[in-house]
Image 1 (cartoon, rainbow, N blue to C red):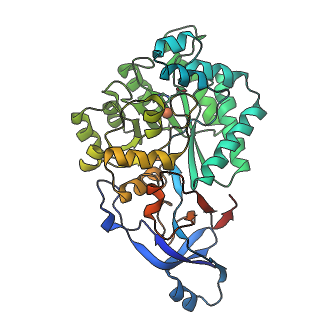
Image 2 (cartoon, rainbow, N blue to C red):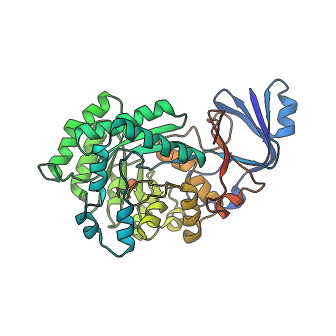
Image 3 (tube, rainbow, N blue to C red):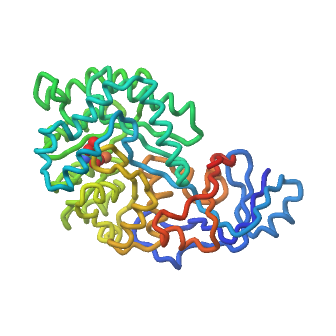
Length: 409
Ligand code: NIG
Ligand code: FE
């Protein structure tokens, strides 16, 4: 047993509901608290002095100074395995160029595909681990990572294998997702339908064989895959035993309905979701994931997070970190900004980047500080948890604990 504390505040996030709006009064804040750890899990969270008295034989890790602790964060949507850089896309977009003009001058998703295909396994792995370490330094210990810049058997497997190798080099938990249905690659001879069949018959069997991912994603959008073909594809992947997540309603509404109809674990983006569909999502168990990093990267509107919460949805917030639409990668900055534009309470934001985003990945063993859950938590040097969002990402995490072990930032 190990006892860590005292913390000026421990924000446990215990007893908060999985769905719907939250007020800050619902937050449980333990003043001068301690965290008692048994191996990888939390034994008890409570008043430090009481925990000391009850646990004379625990190893003591004394915290000197003003620190607070919260559950570590989960980033449930990233594309951080990629080669190259799209700074030129960003500059062109800001200079007023259209999506088509950027694609024609060699930018867009296809350019990341080319760079990712060209990258050696070692390069891909090295930059991936660097990005994982950056996310851990923000207090994120569970990270979803998508393929989707390979778009053929060889390169999709290369990406997923590098994610698997990265898992051997990090204590953070990585959750891989196969996004071969990101875009039909330009060099594929055949139409969308044939490419989706190719994923089903050529890529997914190998993904299964090598246990590279249990989740499948698709980008449903005018410029990518169309609603009907996507629905048929998702139903087939479900039959194959994959969990489903969808890039939905980013620019065009409608696809979030498909995500709900096929029983997707989450529908992500939703910037263009119409009111009727907000209700439909909110009545389902499909998590609505806001990706403010994509709104900030593209200069587009935010996901209607307020309306989703008011309607009773399970709202997660993730970074979408990718080389094109969301190059920033700082989930804390992005979530803080989403809060100011969408009027989200601190409790709603914290829930959205902890137990609700973990739920989007099917993980219910983390994201709150309470008995029996994974001992992943983040420590900030401050005496007030409100300072985290108030500083909009510039208050850095001081320490991160993964499975009860301190990770040096
Ligand atoms: O989630 N929308 C589609 N996919 C990514 C963008 C990928 C890229 O631009 O490279 C997204 O925003
Ligand atoms: Fe994405």
